[in-house]
Length: 99
Image (cartoon, rainbow, N blue to C red; front, top):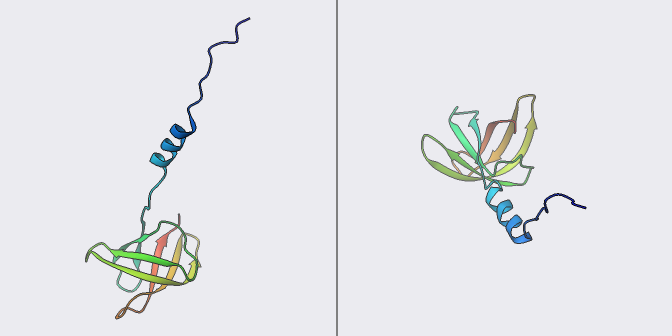
């Protein structure tokens, strides 16, 4: 009685390797600074909570800032991140696409 071709399952190490290779690495999240209209990128690419630290990169000036998230406002099509950045900017509102 034949049961068809045998199916070989990959070893756990091989499965883990493919999972790690295909896993998304720290991607950025696009948006803009509401005050200056400058295009920005936020890392990590997830919705933060109040108290989280994020990295904000400004495309045009190639400046990177580490900021503290003060508030997250959910809108229909966007998220607004109110963040505290190093002086002189202090409080900024970043408008982000919904992910």
